[in-house]
Length: 151
Image (cartoon, rainbow, N blue to C red; front, side, top):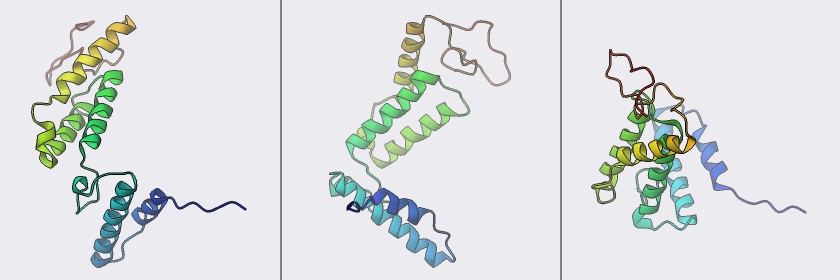
């Protein structure tokens, strides 16, 4: 007979999908979500001091490195667009700087992301295929990119 295995992620998803009927219900739902996130973090081995008590999010150095690596890898593969991915990258780094300034101090995600994207494209041996990439085709608002753009 198969044994039921509790999956806290499914609990979190079910709580998140509830429609609040009033402001008190919404506050209760958010508290339940934070409690569920905290439980998931603790089960994953995150120290209690590294868990945000209000939201239940993991604010550890490991989570910082994972978020940073994820954003840099996204830019490495796809380049950066000034209206979408670049703005989101800058916002993500700013949030980490607000939450844990000791991790983000002197750590320039944008510079590293641009450098690894240039390396990635150079290894492909062809121009960057994304014409909106500000790494290879820097554009000021209202101007047109140079044909071929810089490599």
